[in-house]
Length: 308
Image (cartoon, rainbow, N blue to C red; front, side, top):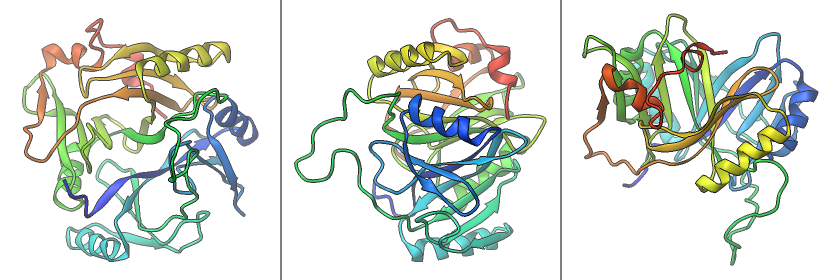
């Protein structure tokens, strides 16, 4: 599939309660690479395999959560075209000037019907990855921390899933990959969307409050790396929400845990490839337990309800 519009998730700005504590934790435990700070005091990080300058931005605030989630698009012409399509769809957009974020070009910012702030951008400085592009080694080994491959996706909570799904599909060109239905068999409880061939690049769950973050997710290369991540979490006394297991939805293997501010994060691997000609997978309410946690087929109330 030729990707000609929205390419991939590009950055997440996460609110933390103690910036210095969080910088140390995201460096030492997560194994992210610090990439500097800006005039606002925000701290920037990237993962080992990402080539762009940053993907995780930390901002100190009084309340944990997500400020915005950004997607990289193909080029400036695509950025302009998508902004025009958003406006024609009735969405108010804002242009954020180049340089407002470190090493990042002009951004188009807008709110989706669930209340979340989404950004599109075309340019971010390419600083290379940990192995390089000429005769590279297969992987980076024996590094401190979890050291994920990339910042991969997020799951967001809000009320208007139908409007958000329509915007992502009709305007941004995403495809619906999976969905979970409520008891009536008609209403979506959750939707998983992709702009690529991945099982998902963003997901939404229906919730009474808008603009909530469930988790930001980081990809690992194997089940063994997921188990290694669990060991690192235990050694560092990280608060683990859900121990290593498998999802029915997307088929990914996973751990859910919290950063020092209470933001839920995920490390995962696996999942299947999705292409536009594939029919979306549907999970019915009577099997939602298996959809979320395939091994024990039971819902975890705290997992569903705790958000920032």
